[in-house]
Image (cartoon, rainbow, N blue to C red; front, side, top):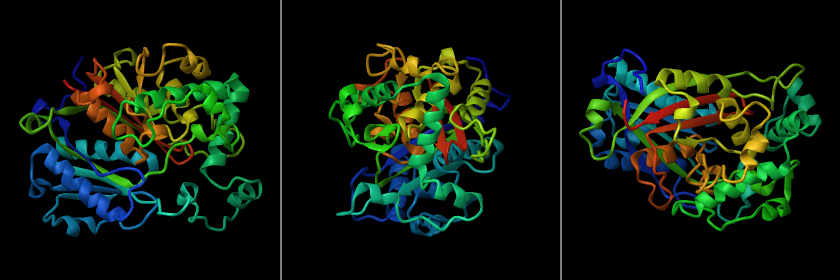
Length: 394
């Protein structure tokens, strides 16, 4: 692999710690408590102390409390980098990017990036977890609302339907992604759903918003995750195998849902993916593992297309090709089960599994070749995208 840029090797950024709380239907702790616990676990994982942290990047989900007050909760003093970030599911990747730039510029030495959420309530339906945040729309938004577009399910369904109409993508092809990721989840002790499913199970699951069946849609989870970013030189001397941050990119299309939008046909991955790979000095053929944001099966399919794993419009045929996805497949995609079957911590889901795979710590689900790992984050309605290229050697 060629060097991605002129940054001195000693200052190049690496991920040195990963902290995961209990995940899934975990009741009691608040999102703020999950966040603090995740940072503490990441610090312990790296083999450093809280006092070593001089940078903190914080991101909240749907529930309040994960904010700048986390500094006081953790007892952190004299931070040189500190802010709260929000670009929805693309935020985790973006946090690592900004942390890496801060480390490489000498602005901070050890940066913790954390996300936490606790939308699930005991005794309440899972579907209600995201149901209490609606405000009365105005302007263009009121027209969309009067047309029945009331949340992410309906907007993503519209995008998927457009792809289907344009390229002939089918529900059964989307189902192939769900089946393959559940097979990976069966090997992941952290996964919420580990019971294998078939394509028939996918097709028989109830509709949420056509063309999406229940098994096309991600989980809802409580929990938190944090990573520690420092210099590659320092990471090499710490407790875990260093995971180098080789390249990154972002793209924010700004979909308007009006005429001439390409919603459903292309996402920000088409820009952020090539940018990240160019920085890393790799091509799509060099990618060993792909951890793809999968709030819906369709999101994963579109991202695979936009990254160049297959041609535009060929995603359906690609993912449904026998022997392509799943634990014995040609392409290692969402090796922990993804957000569809493992756990849903926004962009921290693909990022955390990427770190586990790059370290070689995946246990039964570990991919033999894991030198170069591609990580995607998606936010809004295909409106924000971040890409990371991680590796074990720079």
